[in-house]
Image (cartoon, rainbow, N blue to C red; front, side, top):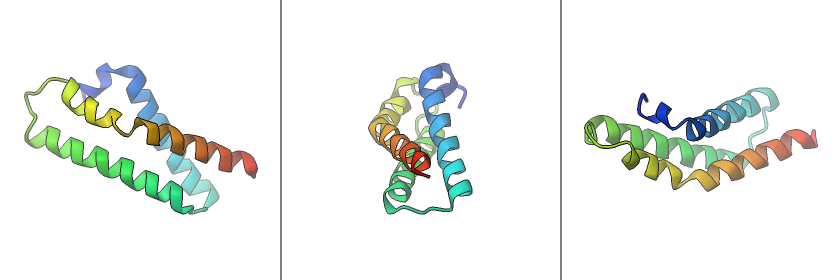
Length: 90
């Protein structure tokens, strides 16, 4: 996590997505299939990357895990836009 915090814009995007998703599920109690699917995929990707980083990539450079996190960046932005759209509808 210390290495990830060096890339501040990317970290802010991930934190914003996490907070927005948690608030959406907590406040709205609306469980849309697409938002649940995106949240599951993104969360599983992060969990698997952190497991790999902790176990195998201990002395790897910073670019290795971030490259895999950026593979789902388009899903993160898309899910944020969907959540914002659902919130603005109400």
